Image (cartoon, rainbow, N blue to C red; front, side, top):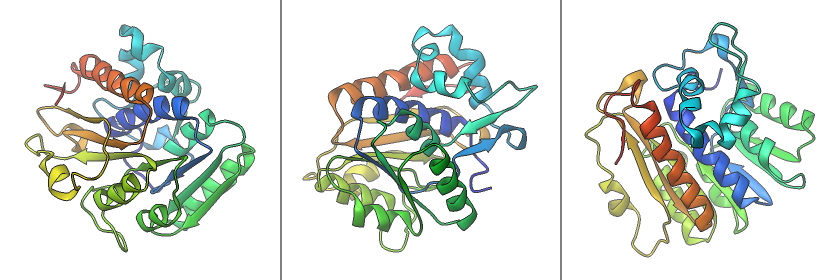
Length: 259
């Protein structure tokens, strides 16, 4: 399995924002740096505090989350804690929302996951290219204005063949490419000073958001976003989803807040 952390708190937050952006941007091409699998068997996963099971149980208490695009898509496949189904990965969610003519391009280091993606997208009738390659280099070589790119590295400062995720974001933003960088926060004391340290003031950045708690429940204290060249509608929807998650998930994620 490419991602043993699938369906955890970080995925819930990442995918909640991603769904709203894809729905509004309607890109002609969706490009992802770390593809993973099309979906995951929830019987083999432990989503942990704030993961998909907590989301599905708590979301009905918040009208915005309950009606969110993410909630609607996940409910179709996830089942229940007692009878778990499948959890869609980011490419599965994006492919379900993209216009029919839109293409998917994904990079994945594991051949088995790349095969799963290619076969699953073909079965959906979705035009797609899946490459077994370093995704940070791949998106920087390939992406162009009109695309929507998701960068979701395990660590935002980890270097691929040529770039860190922060450097890749700067390259794409400078080029005018619609980009979402999701990053994990492993310690509640981590700051986001690296953004101004590593990304030039000449780079056009859009919405920035961090959702963080007091403890590293399930391995993560929180997660953050940095975007470029998204519509104002996407930025507003992303911010609204993160705020809704902060107020709804606080019973299972102590001290959860938008930072």
